[in-house]
Image 1 (cartoon, rainbow, N blue to C red):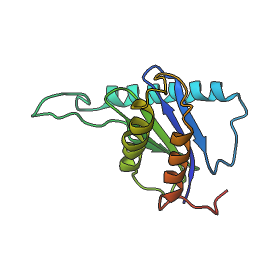
Image 2 (cartoon, helix red, strand yellow):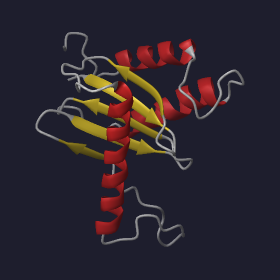
Image 3 (cartoon, one colour):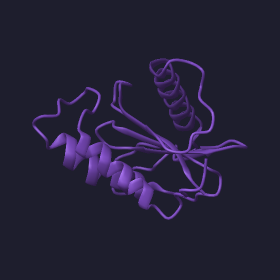
Image 4 (cartoon, rainbow, N blue to C red):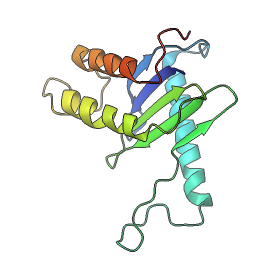
Length: 154
């Protein structure tokens, strides 16, 4: 099992961070174009899921707590895992098919790494590509420490 790559988007579709580990095939287009395609696909899938759901996906009450809609999808080659925060930050990780639900991993990347090392850092301007080397190195260390990350993949 392994991790292929990770995207971090803001609510407006700006790619705040991108990392890759065991990505075997490149898209063949510029990275900026890839980011736009990925965000557009996520936006469309999320919209489709919320429209097709038999329940109100975003109800906010005690009787009907907020439900998570789109969490993941898979193809014959990879699995895309999705986590969206209440502020609209989207964390997307592509893994191989053997990886189960990793919502807790994506939440940790957001709360313990992004919030602590970027949002709370006055030297990191929000809404722009993350330039923090500390964030990049801690993210890399965390992903490499995951039980489903294989150093032999790729």
